[in-house]
Image (cartoon, rainbow, N blue to C red; front, side, top):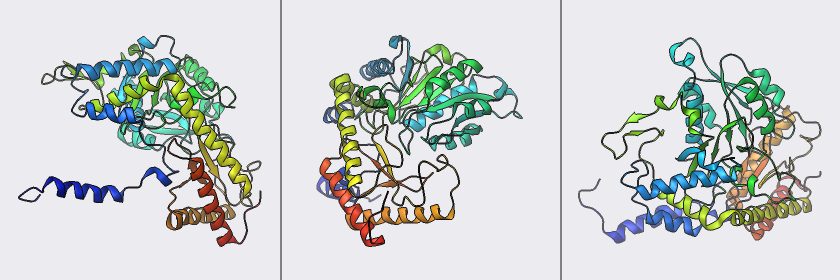
Length: 427
């Protein structure tokens, strides 16, 4: 640190320099986050000083958090939203950690017997946060198979369950393909074996409930109308149009935590509350206010319009791809599109499910994919991602994307394919 501080003008100049190093959302088709809604940003600045971890001092944000949980439980089809229990987190990773923490601590067996290692059954397509959870909580991950549509196979889930299983995980909008697992069947399995079922809906939670009835994925169930679902994580800072960081963890009711809440609860005599039972202590009230504000402002109709816009972009993107001889690896359920640029290596009708080992020809396609992805950024400034389980480019059509962006990125993709391989790929 310098002995003497800089002037305001000098600091602002430095901030501008660093801001210019960041990527604007203009050419970003890789991120599941987007530009926050203006009302979310206004609310954020108004409550920038508040700490929802000290609810007695900041009663306003504490009440907004309670209301945000009720609103979320409502569009997740909770039969009694007022009975739902939860709080805002920093995002899906924290929400998933806490949900599994409670799963483990519901059983005294895994507290008293160090020789017994608990396990968690989850899809192969589960988010990488569960690898962190396994290390943090000393839990074995038992990965169930997925089908050709990147959805977990219920029979595979059931076959993995044993006496050390502490819970099940389902995904509503997986990271790579945006697919929703058959949560209704997972719910039945959870009830059969009396296991908690946590749903990771970090991305899909603000998409699936607001899809138009004409969409194939309309009516995909993953919420509290399925009796086996005990908790859901959902990220307002993604399709919820709130600020970063903003996640929500909702439990069906507080009674689910009767056996585990004391394992995380600590006395906090120096705060205005007698105890605290969240994973983190100080929590930004500004994110709570931003999330509450945008949910109240948009309402169900506003989120339906937001999702409709993104799905219209998804349709437009597919049409533009067809013009250059490409199509999605999987028909997208929501606004995530994966594109295989070399169909000679992978045929969707004969390829094993995502996550299966592929042949050398497929690895060659992966190298081609990585090269095209790099060139899209180096030559044209496009930020796109690639899938891990199959060699494909991955595009996320978020609210900041325009149809002009889609036309431009597909045009640039065609130029690269023509330059690199002499002709456009054939499907």
